Image 1 (cartoon, one colour):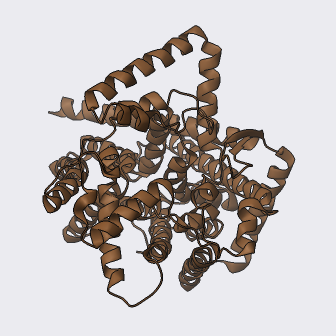
Image 2: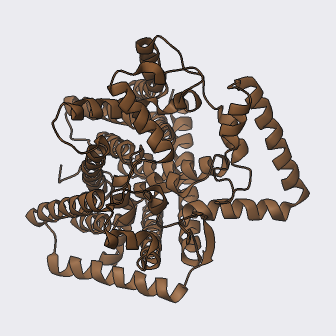
Image 3: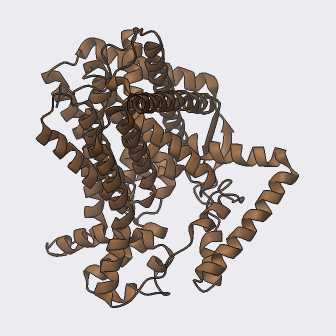
Length: 537
């Protein structure tokens, strides 16, 4: 038995070291690439993502200005106790102000996929079940959207009860503003957990949250990014609280796990790609089971995996039952992989219509679509083998086009609007403020990537200087967020590309970036052991 325990411990610490090195390497690559390159669209008509060599001196100067403002804030505000509560309230108010400003002055409306989801939800809310159809429905191509449709249907049904003339998408956007505030709150708590309740790191996070332009812009996007990430951030926070809560009662530990299970499941229901984050959480839970030897953790991992894998099929069956009809199985996953290996006008591996067109031409025949996709994959592999240089350039551009766009496609996603858009907002899209906005977002991205690198490097160096074996608080749960980022990197190098898809992973890095900035401000290694009980809880 002791021998098995030693083997389990060996596997655990080997896995931990591998995670530390891989995530540190990825953070380093992201920092260097964002320093020298930027991918973004200059023409909002074509929306083509173009590679740019960044103005190095300008971005370093901008980075210096942001760091100076942060350190000035820390020096003169000295956020502690009640001041932290005031700073948190100020940050939430700031996010609300800019969010509502963009909603009612930007006047963005649902388009493309978001319009399809919104229109279907409106139809279902009015009792029109014909949108549940095996061939003549958007959901038969993309049945993974049923969770988001269900959420919007509930919102629209409630909205229709009120005598208010505004279109329902405005209330959805306002809900997004509230969920963005929830994201900030949960990530603030996560930062406290990761940094052992450091006021300095918490203040740095709130500083980053107030500067986060993509998060605010996406509140106007009627799609799953904001609501899904709000639940994911809450689920991660509660999971970290469970692992760091040695002094928590059994009841509170159970509530942490139950709340985490619910919120992570809802995150997947609203955006299926959130499974990447859930997989990271399951890996951490199972790995922790090797060290803690608690059967409860294995049970929780099984429940989490089962609930996240069944939530969307369950909602789909509910709609099929209500409509007395069925939906097709949808575009097969391999079609997304095939498309991710093809060139596109917007960027390598970006959407070019292959998955939709192939499925449509086959008359929604899954088997035929799979064969066509496999043929396309073989053609791409042959081209890569024939020219390794082309393969390298293809995947280099695919990586950079997703991870070095500091705006994360937020302007393109919210571009279409009613005629009532205010001119000062339009300037950010197509006017004189567009270029400064892009450079600001890229400087902010560089700050987050670089600070995350500092955090991971500091934690690794601190562990190496310790004589005793690391305790549980310095274990794998600390890395759950960056493991998700590593998983997102691998997934989207294979899957369809889009810088919008990277937004959740970028947001996950913010608590780590805040801790890195706190370390820089203190000019000393981490004070306290990460991942212990949050004193602000």
